[in-house]
Length: 216
Ligand SMILES: O=P(O)(O)OC[C@H]1O[C@H](OP(=O)(O)OP(=O)(O)O)[C@H](O)[C@@H]1O
Ligand SMILES: O=c1cc[nH]c(=O)[nH]1
Figure 1 (cartoon, helix red, strand yellow):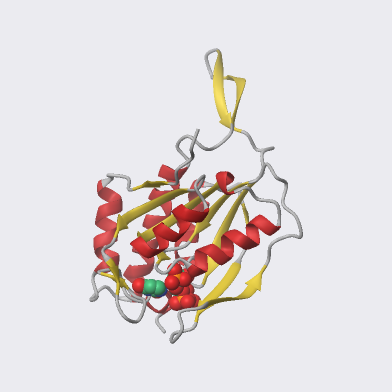
Figure 2: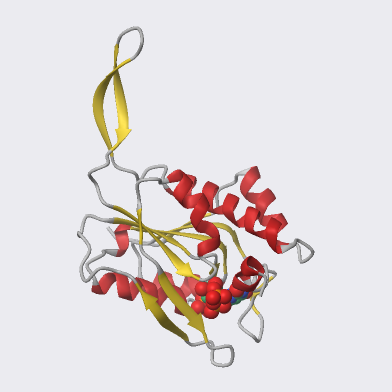
């Protein structure tokens, strides 16, 4: 079977609503952060749909024993926010996945060359290979940042098939790069946008997600 990367754009009115709020240039940082939190919440919810490991058990209701399916707390689950802008999605993602461990990863793009470089890597030397990883990265633009993150996870034992990416907007150059290199990857995004401008910004996009989150 030939694997092909999958990109999901969940047709959810709340996702589209908060995307519209985040895109609006007149949205102030406080409301922008709320919009990103909500996008983190609902995109993570969608990404978990057929992904979270569960276990079968029996619980006692006030009236009778009953079969129940619970999220398996023994299976390792990790959320990786890519700093800075990925932090804006973290509260929402953590609300959906309260038991997940959080491993921060800091990346910054050179504004001239658009080369991404890592300034913070909190990954352990090796992950349990069964670990499921949800990456919070609002903007997939050239794809340089996400590719470096996937390489760092791969170096520490994570198979791309165990990774789900939550992104607010995704641009074709990033998706083409990821699809060519990571056919087993799954991406959940609110929108696939048209392309990039000459500064490497996603168009129409939502501007500089890090600056808008932190008011810088
Ligand atoms: O796909 P790429 O072309 O690599 O671009 C995407 C990255 O660019 C932005 O980060 P930025 O470097 O602006 O850092 P910030 O999150 O700290 O603002 C954004 O938050 C992504 O991480
Ligand atoms: O449009 C973009 C592209 C990269 N990073 C951002 O913050 N915005």
